[in-house]
Image 1 (tube, rainbow over the protein chains, first blue to last red):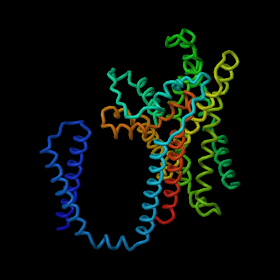
Image 2: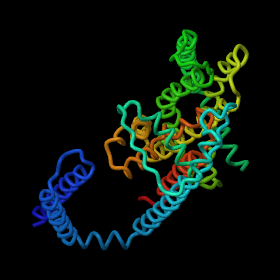
Image 3: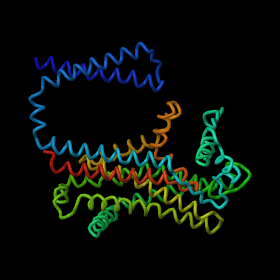
Image 4: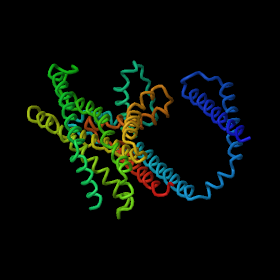
Length: 154
Length: 249
């Protein structure tokens, strides 16, 4: 009986991983995934999850024992503190990207826009969309300049 | 504070009492000197073309961007021993029971490794002195470059401390640190193939992307915030990891 449950756990985990890989790769456009396949992957991941849950239920004795222990208490505390810290830092970074300040310290203001450009950009009433057609290697130049436009038009 | 400094001092002494510091500094000087010399020759020949000659843009910036590759290789070797060595030699218990807080120990070890890193960077001041003596570069972009280097090194050191605190084997710590550094280095290579949001996130995570503006002479609060939060999070995780040592059976 135990061996069957162990086998179920491994099969379930494998199914979940494969299904997740298919869906993620599909979203990221690495491999073409049809809508139908995506749906099957979703069903498969639920089925895999069900198998894992089934396995966990069969191990309830050990789980209860572990949660009563000291490790669980401290481990949960540590885990929560890490998640909270990460959340705070992500929030700070999220704000800092949107509210950044920039100082160009070069003598000629080499990486800043001219006053006229900055003024023009500051007066924009509606969002402006740029389309850039260029070879992949040449994008950096434009990305920097467009970043400058974005900063000046805030 | 004085406890932290005492540990930092002890760590630095540990580096300089063994051959580690001299090997690290010596080979850094050799490699940096070679990069400097080869890029100087390139610059002397007219460099990448273009109408104007700018020592900062065409010599100092490429030299330092190349030098960051040396840090990628050297820093794992500096940080790999910090905690792994303590665990291996059995001094971890002494450290944990000493009348010091975890934070003091971690900051001390961090400052110690940063001290070695700063001495490494200080070697490049010789080359900068030569440029300032013979040429006419702008000083402020050079200062921001050094600031960026220190911050990036700080990220590497904090991450290295964390990984070293997870294992008792130095080689494992060194290799894992190198692997994670390298991933953070190249994570935005795939960015241009992703959707717009993923692209922004990946570019933001890339540790080299934030250095670029520093080497140009631009101070941007978002890069400062990124590096400082990276260092803080690395040290925080190290603290948690060291703390588990107390209760994990």
